Length: 207
Image (cartoon, rainbow, N blue to C red; front, side):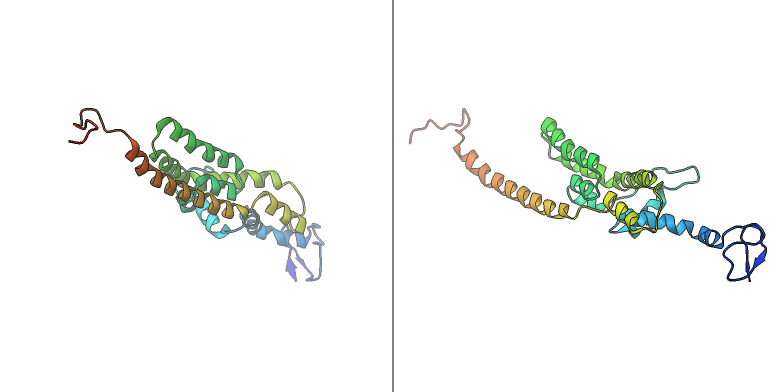
């Protein structure tokens, strides 16, 4: 015998519906698993390192709703921040972090501007990603058929990662190293061609 979760009346084990209130046992049996289904939704959307991000996202939860809490994302800090956002399919933020450091350096001519943007990305990337996942799942949730393979596919297409970004990052890193080496080689040569400063005592003739 099994008890109905709605009215507590005992029913035969093979019963699909309660003979007292008509509640379906299949429907009531799935109710305790709803939190797991919610977690699976987030895990399917996040893709790689989903367990890590789900653990981090717990810090943003509070009884009054989501709130900012300081966390650190080493991937967004150590690598090019715009590449990390692009890897996680946050295209608007990828554009911001691609253009922002360039504009900041253009106006300041200070290489430390890049470090400032990296620190900003490292401190805010997890929280931005949390809202990215939350908002996309809110839009996808009304679609029926969570157990349908097409639903899983739609989650992976909207979420997950862009694997090709890794190779883009490697190419950009090699390009950056090449530019730094070229600038290092051109620097001493350019300084050697500069005329001596005025008043240095050199007349240009042999003594």
